Image (cartoon, rainbow, N blue to C red; front, top):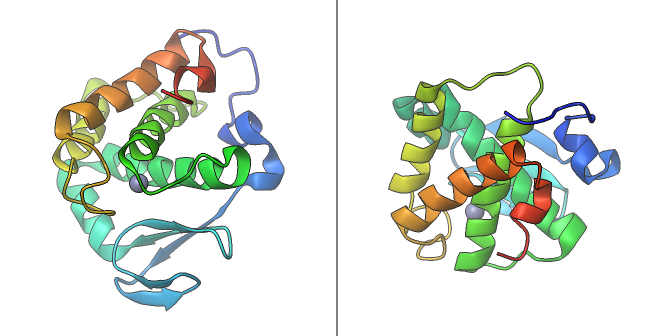
Length: 166
Ligand SMILES: [Zn+2]
């Protein structure tokens, strides 16, 4: 890991006023942007919803994978509220994967071991092309590369510049 002498909280990266709400909900829970069948960020109420089916899926890989899902949706919140870069396309999704890797690498006082990193990247890899917004997330290889790129952007000191506008 690189230099963490700055405030490493992910809220600080983007400005605290933009921190989204986070809700763990039953699969199919209906609120804000409609039925929550998969993890999503809802712009209307600035809330990240993580449904039970995704929690179950993540734990099949390990706890690192659940952290990755939350970070990916947090990235969508920032793409929407901070950068205006969100659209349902492949590059947006890969940028979110990269930012997720960056956020996870920046979490203070948490050291992800090799198993955690493998869990995150395995989920990102397997989720290629077949999850969330179908066909918009990129190939397994692209998603894996994006997460790793984000983690490297943290350790290299590039920060979000290493992910935005790939
Ligand atoms: Zn996404």
